[in-house]
Length: 135
Image 1 (spheres, rainbow, N blue to C red):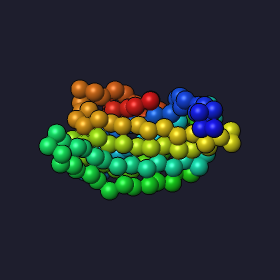
Image 2: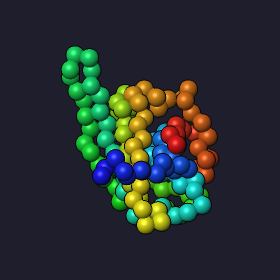
Image 3: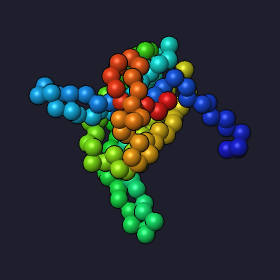
């Protein structure tokens, strides 16, 4: 029965939105998966979308994107996608799935609207740049 399935909680895997600079020294934003584990994340898949529903019932949505990232080594990170500041006013959702020890694990990470901003910056582990992270 479905009630008998006990999903394992995902620990030491994070999604981060990081402020970086391009070759012209202009600010750009990228989204990363960060593997803080001592084990490899295998066959990593990430789906992303942005959305916001207002009190008047109107809704704004972005396209849903799917990314196959392969394996992510222990204590490393992989870029998922670039992100533009215009969608920071939306809820930005990243659904991560991967295999670990022959078990499928998944977790939803949501950056709530207006939370990707300087007041919430921290130094992102392994990347060593400023951004917002959900672990």
